[in-house]
Image 1 (cartoon, rainbow, N blue to C red):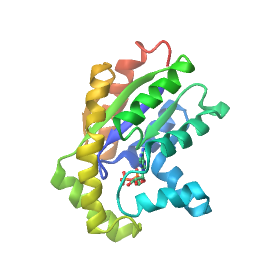
Image 2: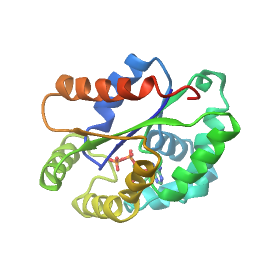
Image 3: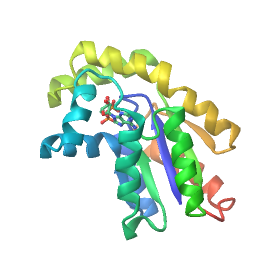
Length: 195
Ligand code: ADP
């Protein structure tokens, strides 16, 4: 099954994707992690992506979709995978659908983890103090939240039209949130004959 884990920066996608990967037994494709790895290896693609990431802006759609599709050619993705931080624009969502339709697949469910803005800001500032990620300064945090609302939130409407959207409350302890996510996945599993 192809599952998209969706949520603003700070919504808890990282924690939940680890639990969901275990449950679904499919590879976990985090574009944030993939781009950070490309940056660390110093490839041209990685350096291009870094220019955007370090400012809290989105990397170009073609670049990101290229990286994801290349990864999906690996045999371990044949039964599905879990997307985390992708698609982040409507163009990425369309390109992913195109790619999956060539494989006779489709996105089975999109889990939207909902967390109020003030709580997102609080969590991200706390993370920036603990982890010291280079793109976690107060300015880039603010930029990433703005980018989420302008460029990424429309992805939800796209999936709503395709009847694939499930929203879950992202407040609570991680196991309780995971249980909501698990039930949402199961509601879509039966209707998902090609994914
Ligand atoms: P967060 O969810 O905390 O913003 P991520 O690790 O998902 O962090 O992403 C970090 C950065 O990587 C983003 O700010 C963006 O620059 C880049 N990035 C990740 N995924 C995508 C994507 N699907 N499209 C464009 N850029 C992306």
